[in-house]
Amino acid sequence: MSTRRGTALVTGASSGIGAAYAGRLASHGWDTVLVARRAQRLDDLAQRLRERTGTTVEALVADLSDPDDLARVARRAAGDDIGFLVNNAGINGYGPFAELEPELMTKVLDINVLAVTTLTQAAVPAMLERGHGTLVNVASQLAFAGALPPHPLPERALYGGTKGYVLTFTRTLAAELAGTPLRIQVLCPGLTATEFHRSRGDKPVAGRDQSVHEEGGMPVDHVIDASLAALDAGEVVCVPGLENPALIDALAEAELAIRTAARRGGS
Image (cartoon, rainbow, N blue to C red; front, side, top):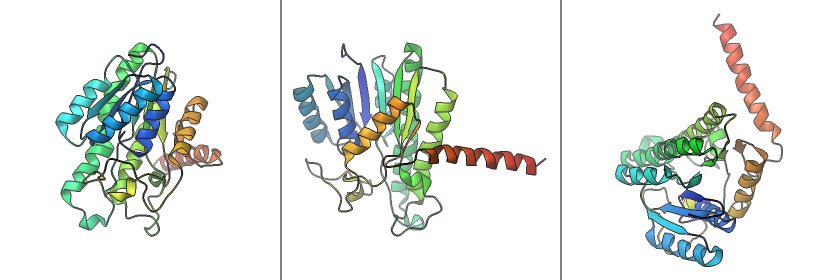
């Protein structure tokens, strides 16, 4: 355990946002627990971080759609050294909903919803008991795109639904824990320059080296910059690239207006 910052657990750490977030935290003095399916990639990243930062790095190979693996990672997330949890692992399952394979549908739900909830529930009690901790749940800007048709957006009914859950779950949890020392954020990146779109999620992208899908997107370091800045500012919802954060406040005001109007209409 680091004598400087504590330990951060990052899921989906073999590439993209997860790998970049782990690297940034290690550079800031955090020991890290790297969780992903691809053992070779985790081992490579762990070695690089140890050499560059001198921190302790643990590689935890796990498929979060597997109940036994999820339980094993949850036990680690509940450890008394975990001061920072990044629930980044996610798969997309893009495609027409009526044609979606049942096995892939279940996998998307298990990773994007069940794993996020389970690992959050594992980590938060220990953080509360210690009086400090940070939680970042990675959603997507597609969580705000429910009514928009596909093309150019992907066919995303399942994925958008799961990220809508992450958005609402994290916002509601933050409201429940307001006044505690915990920092809680839902990170909603848009298209990011990772390999996320190179697989629907049934199988990880092959190869030892990270790649970038053809669509490009925001540089991953910019996403991490936005997340860390929002944490410092105490912002629960972080949308990288959003120039007018008042829009988030306007969203909350619109939600309150809808609930208030609905109560009046039912009286």
